[in-house]
Length: 189
Image (tube, rainbow, N blue to C red):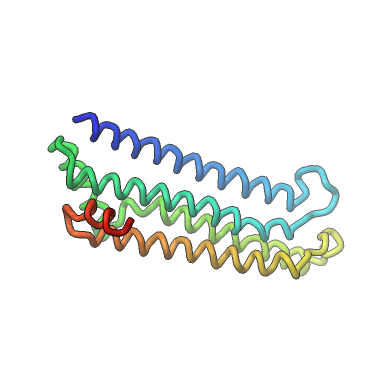
């Protein structure tokens, strides 16, 4: 493997490590917000309204995740088209074939990220409503609805929009004919 290909493969590996770190941070931050909201941090009342900020955290992390995925996608595309190492090219073409297959075996991480964002985002209002219906309204600190509900709605829409935008960019890149990546990048810069 030539030095350029080795550096690009190293970049893919480092990007994927950063992607895994993002997933951990998403879990840690949403868990911390949840623990604080449910009063597990030592306060006497629950602050369930804090759960409404989870979609914003998820959208922020997802945005970086999508950027990393696109970076890996472009590097892999470049290696498929330009690598001097034939074995590496063959490997990248095999990965592309799997990615394009009906099974979508490489889409599991995307769906896990989107699914966790959507589920975590919906749980906030659900827990708040359940607390009200279980006659525990006296334990729930009043939500500043005028501020938190619009933020929650905007953030939930943002989670879905960012996934849609990422999917469109990925689709656009995948439709580029072979050997046009560099010319496409140079003409769009």
